[in-house]
Image (cartoon, rainbow, N blue to C red):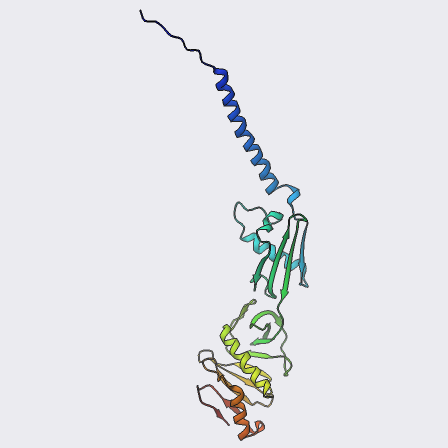
Length: 261
C-alpha cells in the first residue's frame, strides 16, 4: 500500500496577493478617473479670461480664433474652454491668419496660473485700394486684400483697377508676390521722378500687361515679365529728350526696348 502525502496550502496568502493586486488596479483607475475629470471637466481649469489686444471688434475676433482652433481639435483634446487646451498654443505665432483677414499676425499667450489666454492681433495697414467692376477692397503692403472699401480717386491713395475682374477673396492676394513687388518697385521709381499717378490698371493678365495712368491720361505701360532694373535712368534719358507734358505714353513692355510718344 502506497503512503499518501498531504501538502497544506496557504490560501489566505493567495487571497492577500489577489486583493492587493486588485486594490492597486482600482487605485490606478480611480486616480486616472480623477485626473481625467480634473483635466477635462473640473471648473478649476476653465478659462477665466480670453483677452483680445489690437482689434476693434474684440468679440468677433475672439469667436473667430476660438472656432478656428476648436475645429482642429482632436478627439482626445480638451474642450476650447479649458486653459490646458490653449497651453499647447502658448507663444504660438500665426502669420496671415485666413480666419481673420484684417490681421497681419496673431500671437497667442496662455497663463495657466491666471487661467488667462491673450491673443495679440497685429492689424494690416492700408497700402491702397484694389477695384474690380463696381467693388473695391483695401490691400496691405503685401498686396493682400482684407476689407471692402469705397471707390477712390486722386493721387493720395494708390488705386489699382483690375480690368480682368479677377475674383477677390479676403485674406489673400490677387497677384503673386513677385507681381506685386514689381508694381511697388515701378511705382517707387515713378513717384521719385515726380510722375503723377491717378491709378494703376491691370490690363491683360494673360499677356501680363499693366500700366500706370496719370490724371491727364498719360500712361506708362509695363509687363510683369520684364521691368527694367534701371527705371530711374530710363526716365531720366526720356525727359532729357522731351517734356513729360508732351508725352502720351511710355511703353516698357518689350525687354531692353523703350518706346514713347
